[in-house]
Amino acid sequence: MIKRGFEHFGRILLMLKGSISKPENLKVYWKEFMAQCGDIGLGSLPIVLIISIFLGMVFTIQAAYQLVSPLIPKQVVAGIVRDSTILELSPTVICIVLAGVVGSKIASELGNMRVSEQIDALEIMGINTKTYLILPKILASMFMIPCLIIVSIAISIWGGYLAGMFSHILTRQQFEQGLTTGFVPYNLFFAMAKAFTFSLIISIIPSYYGYYVEGGALEIGKASTTAVIVSCVLILCADYGLSILLL
Image (cartoon, rainbow, N blue to C red; front, side, top):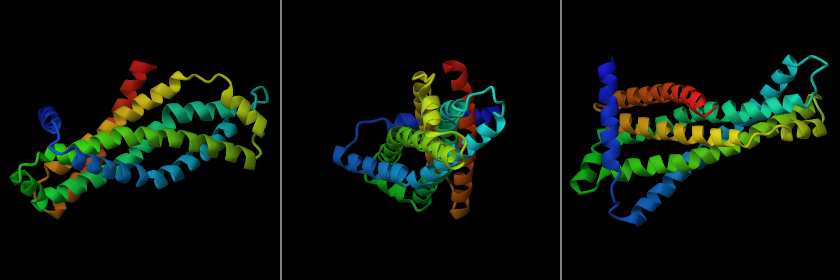
């Protein structure tokens, strides 16, 4: 198993090495990059908004439920929601969801192109398929996923605010006071470091499994499933590693 893991790691490095080359036509690559930004960013925005707002609302109610002591100020709930959202909920949970949404799409798209011999046809025409098909997806993920995480953080906190107001857990003044008290800007840097790292995992792993798929439609489905599972596991491992290194 360890030997197979190193084999996959080596093939991924070779794939990335092959994808980093000077584009033959910058205009064509730019159009592909913008198309991937639309698919990855705008295509994933609705599910990110829905999950984020409910994460903030549920976590606010649960935090208030646990902090029942009259000695604890109500505004502490807002501080807990803010820090938990920035440090863990938005970067990790949303990226795991994106690993399923974006990762399966990338793997199935490349797998279908491989099985239908579209990749072979592009290579016969002299096109570097790794650069043309994989690099725009990686760059678009690196650009759009941190943007989605920023949106998710804002929407989660807003959802917490709505839950606090409608449930009469705390007033608007208490929420705003807790939101601004003790804020550490470094937490945002940590969240962006996680988002950037996770974006690489979400784009590279599915690209690898999709690009090298062999067989037919059944193998494409298996490759997509494997890509999502491996991406989720690596995201959790990277989350733990980054927490040790940066916190």
